[in-house]
Image (cartoon, rainbow, N blue to C red; front, side, top):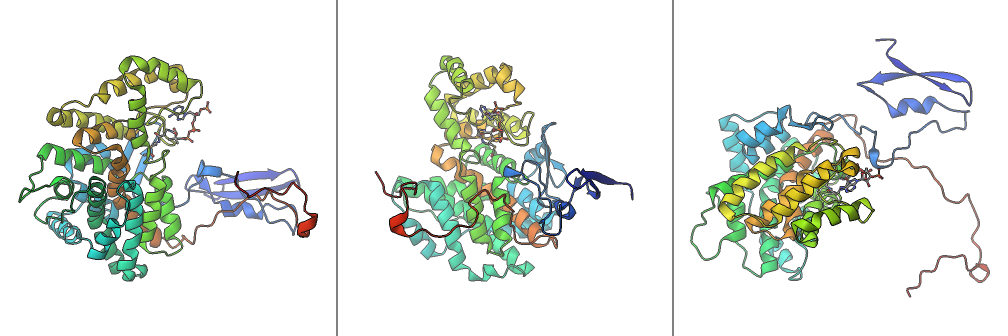
Length: 438
Ligand code: ACO
């Protein structure tokens, strides 16, 4: 509609501007015409942490944070977690539609036949210290794959891009399992192509001397469900890094490593590890009220609570709670569950959390399940990264094919000095910042 525009009066110049609406937003570049004179650069917006800025079009994941809705390609997360496998969901995210039986067979076959690591990658992993954090090993090794597959730089070729996706989705569980066994000093287990994606992962993690690994089907399915829940989450911190690094036309291995680095932070995927530390620190159910009191007094954050987008219960947390019950029937209950349930009960009634719309997020319960399955907390974010690799690749593919995308390059508001001349060393005052260590 011709009248469908925003009218802006610039009181500095008393000039009226009309900015057309664009899909419920305005284009930031349309503000550039708002100037005080010919020398003026034009108006920009200031939005640290991208609180109110859409950086792309995307048809992959839909979230309604107020209603607690999460959908991949239009399908509710609840249905996907109930009816699909993780590899089926990875296909959906990347290809846009659920696969037919034939398409899924071919997709699984491709991914399965790219699970093995080049022996030099194995040697690379062996070089880490015995106590190296698995996430550091994971990030470095994914980046190192770029040296094995230089053809990945050919990002303009759709077929080559697809090959790198098979490689990445296929190899991330192998790398993750290697990082796990490295810490324990166990020999590496090679992939078994007869097994499903999660069964093979469990085989590479936990097989000892037995000739064939038999995964517990309930635990394998639980891991598959957790992978589905973590597979994508629209323009989160790590997806934004994937797109930003990918926008420079870097290859998908280094872009995925960069995204995994973003995921590793405690405010993002690293939160699941922090939740377990927090539950350990609390120690017992009756210590919960005192702990919550401390949080309200500003002593840190309640890890696994709150979300930039969800201002209602995170739908993934609800599904994880159900999955936890199935897992605990096999493994026995994790003693931390009682503390977590008490924490959730008290926080959901407390005015501080209610007012700020702070609810448990995906990471609040995932760590408790992972620990019951036998993972130590350092592995939790690596598990997250395995499944999020599918989402990162879907975001990357969409970005590469988007004709409107260019190299990512935000603007800044410069707050530094105006031009000044260098003062000779002997005349510099003590106001110069000291670089010497104490
Ligand atoms: N515990 C206590 N208070 C909190 C928490 C929390 N977990 N999260 C937010 N708040 C408070 C803030 O202190 C702030 O209070 P104020 O208004 O009095 O200053 C208010 O709630 C708003 O919080 P912001 O930090 O502005 O929210 P933001 O959207 O920037 O942060 C985030 C979201 C990073 C997830 C935050 O809630 C947090 O740090 N949570 C704990 C870490 C965590 O669980 N991260 C995992 C997120 S899910 C994922 O990435 C997979």
